[in-house]
Amino acid sequence: MSTTIRAATPADVPQILAFIKGLAHYERAPHEVTATEEGLLRDGFGPQPIYHCLIAGHDGVPAGFSLFFFNYSTWKGKPGVYLEDIYVEPEHRGRGIGKALLVETAKFAVEHGCERMQWEVLDWNTPAIDFYRAMGGEFLDEWRNVRLSGDALNRLAVA
Amino acid sequence: MSTTIRAATPADVPQILAFIKGLAHYERAPHEVTATEEGLLRDGFGPQPIYHCLIAGHDGVPAGFSLFFFNYSTWKGKPGVYLEDIYVEPEHRGRGIGKALLVETAKFAVEHGCERMQWEVLDWNTPAIDFYRAMGGEFLDEWRNVRLSGDALNRLAVA
Image 1 (cartoon, rainbow over the protein chains, first blue to last red):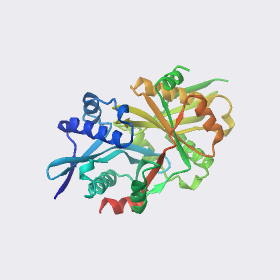
Image 2 (tube, helix red, strand yellow):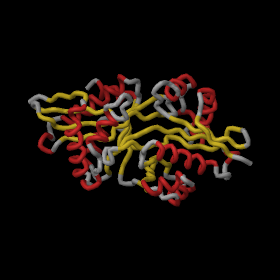
Image 3 (cartoon, chains in turn blue, brown):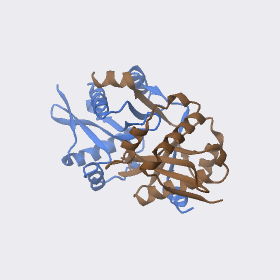
């Protein structure tokens, strides 16, 4: 009954992709994952990694992950950590592994001079919302997220 | 009557800070800006810049800016561009400068292998919302933004 959290290495890439697919399934969008091991290796483990990743293990078995990158607050004039994914395998839930991943991600943020950590939660995910609120999380509900993808992005780029 | 867009240089840092303050004033939070020229210089113009910035000029006068950084889509397995700030000075509005900044930011995204550009808009900013929708922007309203800052972040990091 022991949980460990450690930084991911290139050898973890197949497991990272499996976690990403597991999370997409939980978020009811399993078919939207087109990421490949090659891309994840290139973007997370090159000389200038675009993302960072922590792996949680439980009794030596991979149990979950968090994946994040730096964002930037122009008001603060400081970097922050943006938590893109956090996920614990169904059979390992209820053991505090999600909390342990959040704690280690927060440590990474503080150690890298960040005053903020930010992420998103689906509006129907009440258990997660309650958990984040209890922790002191602030919900920025006056902001709407806008995304421009694929063809619409390409159209704009040649306007 | 000519608009130019160019990448920011270290010499633009005082102007970037002035634009950041102008945008905070428009967003009704002028006192929340604690950024300094030193921090902006360090974070945007070192060997591994955390953010990138474009400066718009109109008839040779600085008129606005966009400031952005890379994010990462685990579903796509690709980087994206996150547009943190876009701003045009009041006296230069209505000349298509905001659109020109968006176009050049989209070009940066496409040239850097991104399939997505994402940003936030305040829910009362109807002109901007209509503008983004007309451009093909998708509103991700099922996601809520959560932020953990300052003391709450430090408490979590030592949990």
